[in-house]
Figure 1 (cartoon, one colour):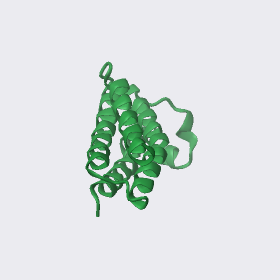
Figure 2 (cartoon, rainbow, N blue to C red; figure 1 turned 180 degrees about the vertical axis):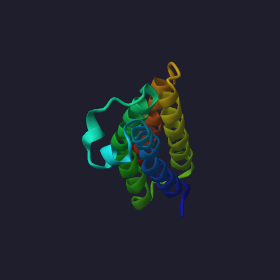
Figure 3 (cartoon, one colour; figure 1 turned 45 degrees about the horizontal axis):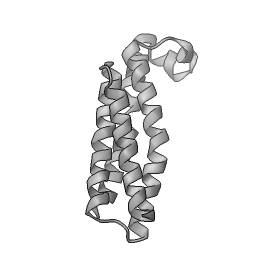
Figure 4 (tube, rainbow, N blue to C red; figure 1 turned 180 degrees about the horizontal axis):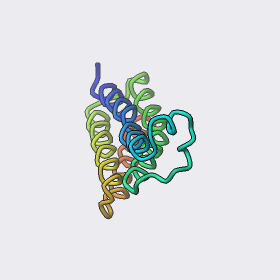
Length: 129
């Protein structure tokens, strides 16, 4: 399996796990039954958990274009060392985005997002350039 596809799998796995911290925070704050019966949906989350939820939403929104360019590069035989490098950069940018956003570190969210966006654009350029 190519590095590009491995990174897509890792990004997908990371995104699949991002809901756990904020749902556990909801359960801890509001209780299991209130959470499972949706009664707690309007209960405010701790600030860090609200940021984690937003980071997860952002990861889902950005997974689609990243997955598309990785798959097109692979199927169109445009995958190369550059796409492998930037798929790896994308993965680490998403890790940094989630951790930085959740922790509330200034500037990390925006910088990590920009790096991930750039990685996707560079992979796209390998296809169309």
